[in-house]
Amino acid sequence: MWELSGQYDVGVWYEYVRVGTWTNQYDVFCGVVVNGVRLDQPYCRAVEECVEEVLREYKREVERLREPPVPALVIKIDPVEELLREWPELGAFGTEWVRKWLDLRDRLIEIAKTLRRFPWMVGVVRQRPMSILHPYMVEVYVARDGSETCISLTSSKAYCAQNGAAKEVKLELEFSRYEVYEDKIREVYRPKGLLAFATAAREYVRLI
Image (cartoon, rainbow, N blue to C red; front, top):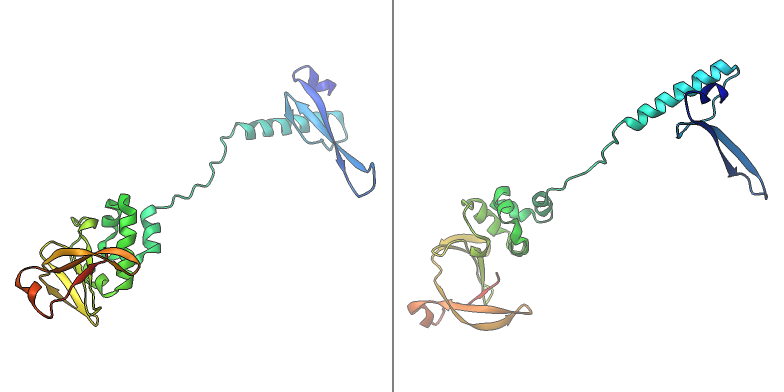
């Protein structure tokens, strides 16, 4: 300590650590403090050897303290990939389409739930360009008698399926009324024009 005091601010630290289960059983740990840097106790015999070891340990500790902290590992989760993992049906529209409309997440999930219910619609969507399609242009209808389901991607075209076989049709509907369907109040539509008066004309419930 005396040999270092001329150039450094030196001192001693010590700490009592309780050991065992009996009362007043303690070990004492101590070491050297150089310029406020706490060092472990040196293990040496000669004074010169102790001075060298303390200075070597002090310089090593100062260098370590100067090193920038290791940045915490940050795992960035892509919200689009996360959504596609949960709802892979949306992949039919393309990753970039999902990314473009991610702000409408609730609507995308609503679409995905419907596609999961009617898997044939996934194939229809995948075969058609979707880059400019707005999520609220996707409409799904089901015949009230359950015989047919349809998905509309544009105002002029729809794809309807009976027993899983899909075909392109021109589905022209007009609003008729509100009705409870599957525990929700939904819009009911009927065909426009002369088809509305046909005996076998179907009525359709809009699901989304």
